Image (cartoon, rainbow, N blue to C red; front, side):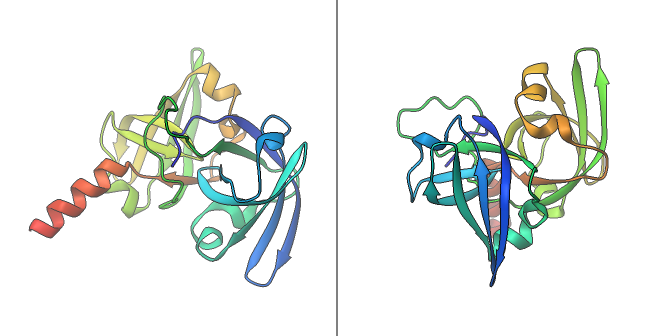
Length: 198
C-alpha cells in the first residue's frame, strides 16, 4: 500500500530483457541504501519487489501484467521514474490510498502553464473513468492528485503545484506520452457494490 507521495525521482540505469520479464536497475541514491531485498517500491505507481539493493541503486523485475498494463515496457536507460516505498503502520497518509496496482495506461492530452502551476489533461481508460469523479482522487505515474475538472468523456484534468511539478517526473511529460493511472480505491468498491446490488 502506498500514498501517492513521491519520495524520489530515480533514473533507469539498465534494462535487461529476459524470458517473460525485464530486469531494471534503478539509480536512486536518496532511498536505495534503505531498501532491502523483498521490499516493495512503486515505480510510477506500479508496485515492484526489490531483488537487489546497492548504496545508490536497486534492481527489480517487471513481468507479465506489469509489462502489459503499465508504462514499464517502455522504460529505457535514462528514463525518469517516480519512486515511493511502501507505507508502514503509523505513517502519515498525506495523499490517498494507492494500491500500486495500475488500472491502465492513459495518454497526455494537454499540458499547459497557468501562472505558477500547470494543468495536465489525460485520457482515461474506461476502467478508470468509471471511478473518476470531480474533486476525487486519481493516481498519475504514482502521484496522488485531485481531479480538477472533467473536460469531456474519457478525460480528466489535474492541477500541478510548483512543488509537484519539480519533485516528480511529470515535468518531463509531453503531449502523447503514456502515463500509468490508478483509479480511486474507494470508488472501485462503491461501484462494485452498486453493480452487485443491481
